[in-house]
Image (spheres, helix red, strand yellow):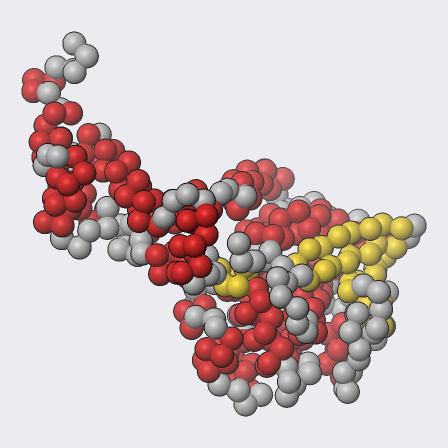
Length: 339
């Protein structure tokens, strides 16, 4: 499977690209990222493509990623930001981000270590293919700093910030965003702060809301670990009625191209059309046998362009009309089929 990240990672990209003299749409095209990613924050796009986009954008502006992080809010982390917001203290906030960060990005892993009076937040970026990661690392670091200052105050500064890569020509932006104590060419990427910072309370926390969101995110995490066919089934089910249940649409939202998705499904012993038919057959039974929806509406809910197309499909798969199937499931005079 291709490692992906939510398209919300691109928030602020187009604006900053234009400021530094880049054409954001042309840059996206060059990286193989669909332009729809700028408008749909939940679209899953390949993390490697985002890495390449950021590195190309940073060729003329070494501080591109850090400047982009200033245009972003921690809320862009989606459900991860929701659960973090309701934690009782900063330690809980960071632990929630560590636990669920894969829901936002599959390319970034965070770890927390408390040693004596210090708290160390390390993060690692990993991509399926080799390539420079300076901009990706600094974008993650800038986002982490925004998150910490949200709970510790805008004037908060860490003890130190460590970066594996070498320093840029100018440190002005780095000092403004990361603070004065930045060390380059280090063994890890991360932030070192006081253990007391982790104990700072979060006045806006709601324990009951945290429990509710935890259950919701737990379901998202379980879905993220589901098999590929199950993920495709879910996307087909969610997009049928809107007429978007196509291999192109599903592949784009999963961050792969249609041919790759078809190959991956074939390796699982199935295909997109098989899964589409499976979902339609399950849903048609519910709509025809358990509801009184008009057949035209059932046709739309199953993603058919016209009632006639649905009628042909139903007769081909069931050997009878949809109306006959409904009549057979609804005996006259309210008498049950079991009686």
